[in-house]
Length: 387
Ligand code: A3P
Image 1 (cartoon, rainbow, N blue to C red):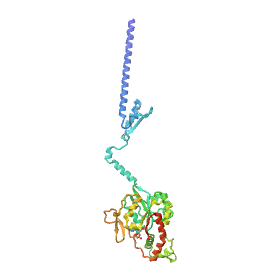
Image 2 (cartoon, rainbow, N blue to C red):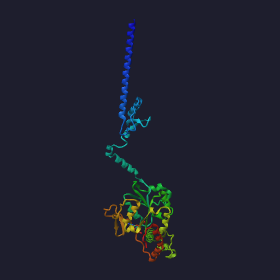
Image 3 (cartoon, rainbow, N blue to C red):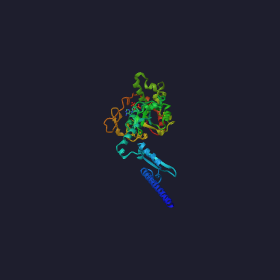
Image 4 (cartoon, rainbow, N blue to C red):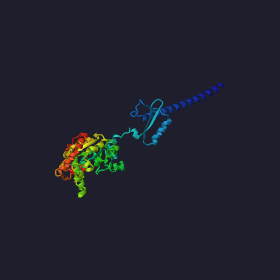
């Protein structure tokens, strides 16, 4: 009886051990699978080139995390990499990268070679073309040679200029800066926008208005002997109004007395350069104003343009070789290319023939202007040598 009981117990124990053995083997297999799985994932996702191993290291992920990450890969087609690690103790790191990011946020060599970038930059460049407020203004003086200066500057590849005179700061100021900007030509960021309105020089409100637009605006003034300037101005008035206007003498002198100058006549008043300049110098520093020698602009345009380009911070593009003298008119014409045989000359309204005035009229005017001219030379530090 005892023998039978003993053999039954032995069989039971054997069956249990077998079960324990089988379950132990199963556990081992499952553990192995886990381990292989995690190792594979770590291997796939780690990119030592992107994240230095000194900072991050791959962490064995739990099954749940792994599964979710795999879902990311499947769900978002543009996800190409998963990185995981720890930044510092206890802070886990897990980042899903898009294809673009995975490529290091840069274009491939292939894309570069295919010109994709060129097309992009050209498009971007086009976007930069827009109307800008002028960085430089020719503010005067009327009949000094302002049109010639503007036309000469226009030949420079880094300059774009308005055609007609905008008269914004003296006549249209109430229309606002956006209105003004719309009058400007389209420019690239490296190009200079310039306009000319000679009446600005003699209009009291203009300096502070320009300063308010931009205190770094560069100002250019073409000055010419105030006596010939006055006669030139009068010649223009004559050509517009014909014989209906008073003689030069009756407007320039009070009571027909050549010793009494009528300073209220605008034709005379404009030539008091130093007076107008004082108004500008109360707002702008002298170094922000460039004086172009009007007579020299006719006889030696290359030299005057060299100074102008220097003042405007432009490369020296316009040289003597850009000019050709129109012998019959006695004025230089500008060539777009130095190889051109012909140049662009100003129209007949520039370089008109002046009326011959009695000698006592011109000498009286010279006497009148002399002290003002002397003062002007002092203030500008330039001797214009007007007699
Ligand atoms: P005149 O017509 O009295 O000769 P503005 O353009 O400021 O109105 O100035 C006109 C003056 O520019 C002309 O006055 C002329 O003397 C001068 N000028 C200077 N360079 C010139 C050029 N290359 N062609 C024609 N006129 C020029």
